Length: 374
Ligand code: SF4
Ligand code: SF4
Image (cartoon, rainbow, N blue to C red):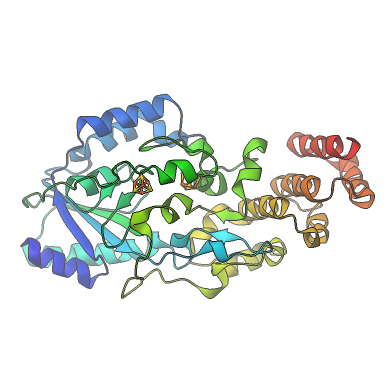
């Protein structure tokens, strides 16, 4: 039966498929509690909700009569952001193609229908990313991949370039052997994280992580972290790129998340000129749409501020009257980094100050003035 399920999973694009009991071991439960107690979830308050935490620790409560968790993985193609020029932004590899939520959910549902045919109708639930499921712990429990010190799942052949999904089922299938750990004494991901977000092996403080800052964080990005973000405008792959297990990995044969040309290394100035309609058109069906226009353009401003590229100044000045305070504020910061000693730029920022009402933008203007007058 498991062989047939694996074959079906493969037909639907899930190249890896393993089986485990719906149980989270004590070590992972304690790690979750410690992470929540330290408030490392940042603005993602839902992560600390009691009911969600309980479900994370007790997957058996997610489906009545559950017997087995089937962990599934879809490999994707890593990108090579080190080729980026100063005028280009970097988007995390998983987000270069169609939105994995949509691609995988559709295929999971089709797989669940096929399993009903194979095993007779039975209880099933499918999950991709958004549900309270400790997917990396379950994947390790069934031997799909081990959890690396950067907290992501690593497979010997595909590295950590994997999107995970789960199918909870009432079918009683024998569990596979758990994965063994192969990080050894390596600490490359901890050493190379630009913001020091991997505060200990297996512990990522989301509040410092560029993935969180560029996607989940909805407000103003903490000032002290902006310069460490470089030109990353949606997510971050650095801890994966330095991992010895994730290098030299072949692109998957049938890449269902295959990259779109225009998201590979997008021109920052072109992105900053996007209005709402153009943003929606460009990122239709892409995970990048999740930030909304204001969130992405905020990140673009930060990347411009870090670029040392003076050609961006006119584009930044042009968004000083944008309706989004997030964009206005981060544009002022970028101007402070690039051109705080330019009298004309200071004049434009001064004009903004006269009409600005948002206190956070006013704080950014004060930061600019501080640098200008220094
Ligand atoms: S995604 Fe980037 S910022 Fe986050 S832990 Fe990895 S290297 Fe650090
Ligand atoms: S970089 Fe090293 S420590 Fe980090 S996940 Fe990879 S093998 Fe493990």
